[in-house]
Length: 503
Image (cartoon, rainbow, N blue to C red; front, side):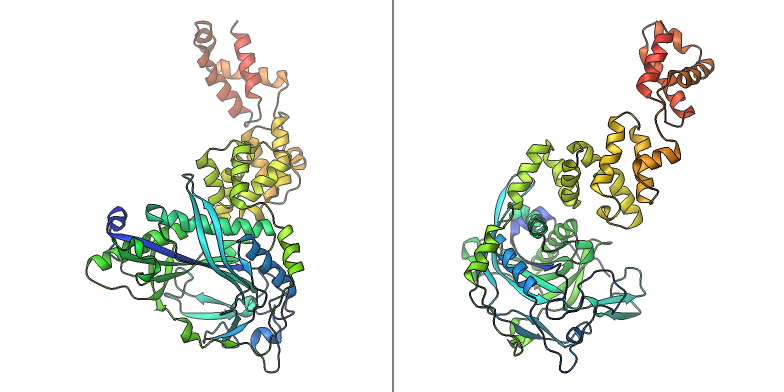
């Protein structure tokens, strides 16, 4: 794939105003699918979580999942949307091999939630209000697994296999109105918005929101218009592209920035932008053309004849409104201030998707900075090496059991890392691993003095240096003792004993 010409980002902003629109798809974690009794479970063997409705078999009829309706209303309320007194479903007709029916049941002109707004906070402290056009219910499509090629994507694949397990999983699609005024912050706004949506659905408990699993996906629409049209609102907008299914916060920011630079260069060269979907390539940090972008008329929407309209009662809506959790922006501010994290430290936690496990670890008894250190350090490194999610490797309670041993002086950080590896590898509890591996710190003076004497025999001039006031010379003996005792010596006690010998 040839690399497109890119305009410098600052120059692109000087010549054009970026306008974005974001479509976030949230998979709901209901027990069954949107319109069928098939299990809604991630990670099963391909094509096992199926029922006739998922495949569109003749004679099968959809039935609305009421828990999905409740979750969708809760999400709409959290987005400050109006909840429709009457909404319905439509058939969105298109052929894809991962849609067994050749149409998707969605909501078209009467979504369950509409006209909302979400407040987001950027790392700089800037507050942005993102306007929400609609949040509508639909079913997810299946999944194509591309075989062959280097990236697992369709480009370069030898063939594709269809897994219908995801077909019919309940989705809420949240569609923003065009977002103006982002300027240089536009890429950050996109990532912060998706991060806020993730926080909202996690707080509501309606989705696992695992972007790497596709539980939460973002399509980023980007367009540019020449400077001088800023007051024209939506009446003058550039042609947009839609970068599909970007699955990390960092990639969302990078993809929006790339499209701004790519489109700016095309327009500056006298070209025109093609309205199309585009694919994001994490390895190259670039987008590539997908297919021409369809408009609503191309999908031939018509009312779903097998489903009655939804008419949620006001009592239900108010019950769900009363149960809404704290808004994510307020929650983040409270946690950051309460934990004493710097803005950069807190943003790193958020970007890594580790806010919830760190909050749970602090609630279980760990100091905030200690919890941050382990989750963003050793555990994140192990997760990256193993291609796994950090939260799947270890629990907050297990981390606390390790930090308690460090606080008690049984372990130092080096030994604690070994214990964490043992927990992740299934060797038992922290205490059991310390016992089995013999990892406890040695603080008994007898073995320490013996190791100190051996080290001093190798470096006899150290005591004289200490007596001459060069106390830092003790570090050489401490290091030798720690090495001899495989890191299990109490370094503070070793230092005390060395200094005592020098008196």
